Image (cartoon, rainbow, N blue to C red; front, side, top):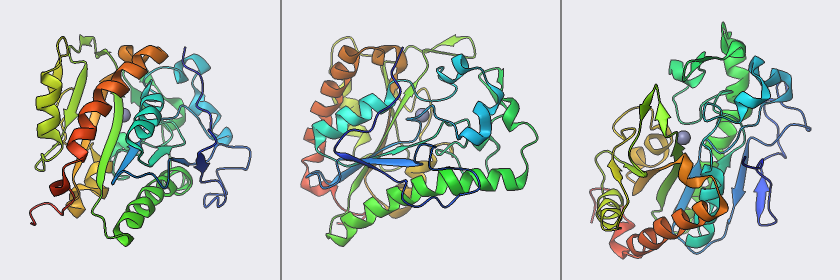
Length: 281
Ligand SMILES: [Zn+2]
């Protein structure tokens, strides 16, 4: 079973200011963590579903602890993969600090699936009949600080005269709704394929890897919110990665996928022509 995420020496958490003081206390985890700030890469990594933590005041939303280890609460293996990949690429990484069941940082706040009451068939009692003020408290405490941290990191690149790339890291469950998913890795994208196209081509050249092009989810769907909000809207080069969770269950699995993705992304990110606003020369 994966270990809870820990904060390493090179990482900082966003706990200094607790804007949602009604929900979070100093004993709660921070709403985001930043690793590898000051790296040499011209890319920012994000991990929306890194955490299975809940604010103590929400009492795990009425779920048994065992349920919070399942994919419904977080992207199993994604935090470990994104940390290792950020290290490999020497890129900063922003990780969300709370479970997607508290508030899904990869959804618009207005999207009903931002606060799910049914997660892959399981009831989430603490989200049933959630009031508008309850939603707002979670958004203020957990969601906005994370997205603000991403915006601040991207702004630092802009201040340095760099048009940065955004790489969102996720993982997906091998079975969803009773259906097995054959892909090992998915590359999600919409109109701007500057990273996605060469990455798809390179991943397909690896023996024995089943590659999903906008599978198991589509980058054309509004559920790809972090990329839409921070990269696509600004014309930043971007890609959303999905790796199947059973491949990330062990440190060896994480290392293997860090190597595969890191190897190909390093080549793609070395292309000087990448760092332009989409559609400009
Ligand atoms: Zn995810």
